[in-house]
Length: 127
Picture 1 (cartoon, rainbow, N blue to C red):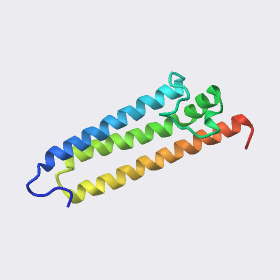
Picture 2: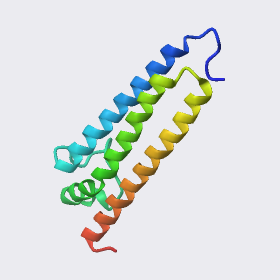
Picture 3: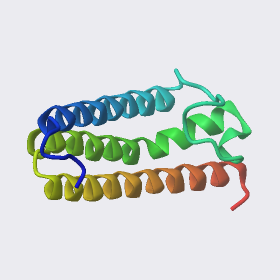
C-alpha cells in the first residue's frame, strides 16, 4: 500500500499529479525549443547522442525529427498526471495509472531517440 489510512492520500495524489503535469509541460516546451533552434546543443537537456551532438545543424534536424514523438511523450505524461490527481485516492488504481502512463511515455521517448539518431546518422552519411 502506497498510502496508509491515516495519510492524506488525496493531497499526495494531487501533488503527484501536479508534478507530472509540470514535467509534461516542461517536456513539451523543451521539445519545441530544440526543434526551432532556440535550444542548441548543451550538456543538460535534449537528445544527446554522439551523432546528434556532431554539429548545431545535426542537433536541429534531429530534434525536428523527434519533436512529434516528444510531444506524444509529454501528452502521455500530462494525461497520467491528470488521472493521478483525479483518481489517485485508490491505491491500486493509482499504481495502474502510473505503470501504464509511464510505459507509454517511455515508449514515446524511445521512439524520439530512434527518430533523432536515424536522422542524424543519415545527415552525416554514416548509415
